[in-house]
Image 1 (tube, one colour):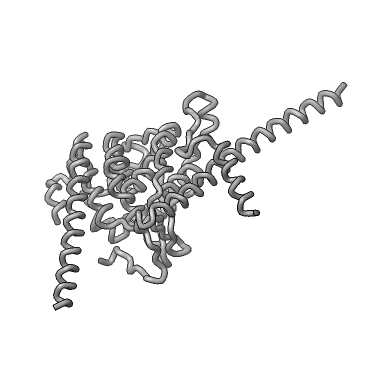
Image 2: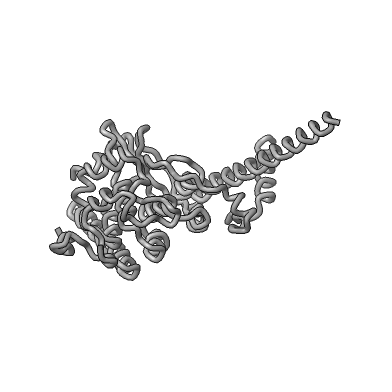
Length: 65
Length: 52
Length: 218
């Protein structure tokens, strides 16, 4: 059909599931850990930023004295 | 086409409720399993012919 | 327009932009969620004309099962819209309720991964932030493979990765995603509970991870 793409064999990827459940689970676990780490780093970065803002504010107050 | 029958003179199509959507999923799944079974049978038959 | 029917085509949906279309739960106008150029490509496409006319919420299931074998926005030199994108646009027109979406996502989604992916995409476009997080996050556990077509050709992705893209990226499948408040903010407001990974406690995991790395070094 004209709306279906001619799938180029070389370009295609295998999307069959449950071929090797253990490997598929392991690959998922890596992705999930990456996500969790990313979120944690983002929170840490925001906290650091907040502390830095706080520190600068204190500095200015002392300088004003 | 099958879906055109559902459209009246008004150019409108009936909304489907969740139960109908559920049933359509059941039907689609069964249709797919049937196709898979048919494909396996054909392959088997072909292999048997080759063995003969 | 009667409340128990849809228009078979998209003309009224697009013509009455902003005047008669009811807004999505997140306050956006579904007719303008996709960019104009993309909408034009969709309604010009063969797939739209031949497979998306006179289609209702149940027919969408058949269209996905029969014709969606990859996710993506537009692809190729002609920037052809994918069947996936066309059906997402159809959903914007049909505006299915949460009960229908639950069928797509869970019962249907267990059987047909592209149906789940499509419904996740639609939920991200139309639902309120807390509902997006609540609805989509459980599918970060869905490790099934998906084929994706984009400008760079065909690549492999996964349902969980696609869901993660929907939650963290600005643009997915040729569509700019509306800017949701960060999860952290909704947690501070007590709208959301912190997300618990199916892997359990992160400290244990990272410890385990480091042990593995140490083992590798030995």
